[in-house]
Length: 179
Length: 188
Image (cartoon, rainbow over all chains, first blue to last red; front, side, top):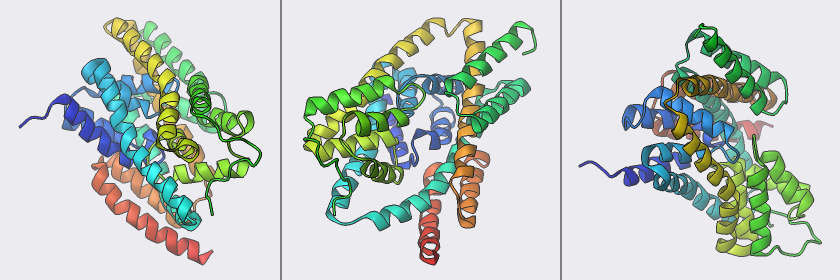
């Protein structure tokens, strides 16, 4: 039996919520897999564009879930998706906050951080690769991805600057008939 | 021992203090809410001192979900219980969500236009680079042990290259990481 869109949003995003170690930037590949491959709610380029919008918009990067929900089911979809991505991890944070105040949790926190930071960073790198392929912008697209990555890696400018430059470069190349 | 040390001389913030504080964090957090969250929580509102904030963020990083959202939940709950947690998350998300709806509707209006398609394709390629660059910088600055580099590499290959489903991958990777971290921490 096919589930309703909202039920599916709650199940899918609720599960992703608990996997988002280091925030939404760790789970871009899973969002992509679910939206494009498993549920077929959008194609890869559409996913990549919504991802770009979520990166440009102000606020926590979990809002990737919000805009995916919006694409699937409008404003109600946005609200359901946002609630689904926020609730499980927030409930866990609440439980941990109360638990750690009762017992000294410093040691547990240290071990968990040591274990999760490398996994989170590997996943973040994976997110970048999956997003780069989803963008489907050809060789020039990869060149722009690489250029933005190098600028971000080397300097501390506001992330919106390399993003604006990369976008402008791609548009200029389109006008020049190169893409 | 309480894990979160509040600044000693500050009175307990009210629900409306919490709401306006996190509303401001959400409003001002263009291009990342992290730095502005610290400014408001520590410097402007004096809710936590530097050590307390570092501890709070440390716990948030060890939990799934956005760090700032988790920080909102924990601070709200600490000062005003469940209602405080809800108010803080609501305050944090309200303005970003409103602007996202505006952006999404603007996108809808122009999404069939070829120029908009091209611009968003370029933005998508750039956004991917943004994440790659940030990940690379964090990786080189994290001072990872050799086993931790292996964990990062395995996570990257499993999810980014092989495109495995994330849930089973994490159910293997996280316990392995916890075991490695326990032994790694004991040696130091």
